[in-house]
Length: 271
Image (cartoon, rainbow, N blue to C red; front, side, top):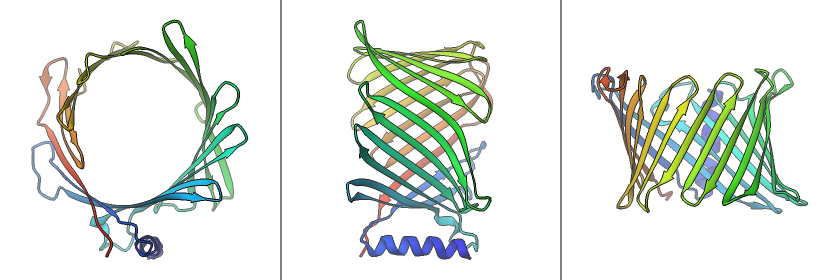
């Protein structure tokens, strides 16, 4: 009941402020294309503005199908951004109704003489009066012969593991390398023309993936092929998103039926 009261208090304040909610309705099928009981509506409220030189964003997401439950599931998020000297500092927080005392933090600072980006992720547990720093990293871009080079090293403190992403962009081509001590992955993205692009990738363990994207009118069709995993199609046009995902065994054997999903977002005007 405390969760229900909290989320109703927040949503009523947003409604009184004239902020229209966004209703998302998704219809999904199971592995046997059975759509029974698959309606999954959700409601989102969000707002943004500026107070005293600080930009802010925030919102509430809740599962509309849970309105009859005593423990209404919801999540809240907020984001603040402010200029501090030569740096743009951003702080983002996320929490959900399972444990509102546990808040995830995402901090970034971008600026300085070389436009460096510093990143840190962690969490705060109000009940235990403790905090955890899980990951730190940085990102730096350089001008390279014929294009632009970007480096993003990170260190996961919880796992004691480091990884790095290297990106090189030149005209319509982008080369991306993701590597850690256990695996490496190379992706080559190529824009073929104004409407078509292709992105093959290969990992050190032999996994391959191919993504094809095409602009069709006002929409975008994305096809993704991953042997021994799945083949998927997704079409996005305005508030509509339709997708299909088919499990795969090997390079061409389909393993089961397609899982279908259709989602529509509607902005609800507040009277």
